[in-house]
Length: 73
Length: 369
Image (cartoon, rainbow over all chains, first blue to last red; front, side):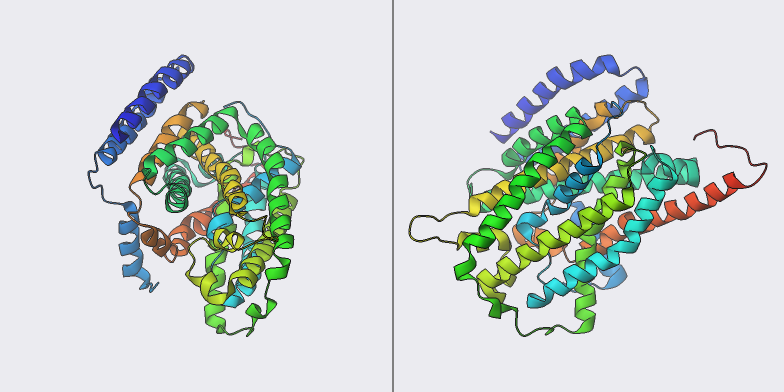
């Protein structure tokens, strides 16, 4: 079900947003940045919707800060 | 993105709504129990010098946002690195608020609904608002702040008979280092998060006094936080206030007027939605401006949806539990310090040097300005 929601979200986004902003995007790097970000977020959301475990950046941040400042919550 | 600008009052209201965002339900720190009011005041006091730095940067480079200022003053390479860092911070902050929202609704209202589905709803609203521009965000803030004040005053008055002011005692039970440490937490969350407005500084009118904008919003926020804290403490007591993840919601839940008027906690929920929307939208706008600056493209508006989707994706796997989410709060001030203090202060010092060089006789005017 979640995967379906994500797919609907992206199809709608591509249909509504991409078609309207495509005319505004004159530069190639604009399009590249736009679609790369869409692709990365899509991959992450699809993986999440399939309950694939993705390492959280919060854990990495906590480990680095613990090593630096020895924080004791 | 059309170069829209917010008026003086809209800027103040937007900053208040931004600051109130997550704090409306998570409350400000409860690390030092009944003495938190001291850390709210000290946290605001610590923020004043930083506020002057933020104001000075905007004053030195009116009509420019932080990304443009950094490129002019720090050079292309350092400017781009700092821009990338600030973009990450804006995306991460939006993800944190989105996750708070999803978690809060799931815990209290919809335990069976996946968080992602809840977050998508908030995402759609905020992306729409961000695409509508900063002016619409300003207007939204003006309207909804009135409602927030109304709820705050109403809940405070409605709870008068249940308040126990003795919960404030003993005063100054926390040690001085504990108070300072807690003030640092309050300083970084939520006061110094207004660094996001440096990224939107080109949306302020040149003639508006930015120091006043920052100062008035800070003063009103401090007032709101004190009222909310005292209400929660007097209603719940120390122990309950400390263990509750969402103290405002829990406190207002206990309010009853006679036998017929209760369940006012939905008003707190509405406050969170209204203020949270402004916070997430401001982060989306800041991040999209940062990406446009990073890749030197003229239209920031086109990146709002991809930025929003990246934040949504990040929010979906940020934490696995509510406890994990609140545990991160202890690390947040240290994590946010470079974004809230180091980068703006570096930009300010570089700006002062740049302006002085410009003022020297025979200096070439910078092409970028």
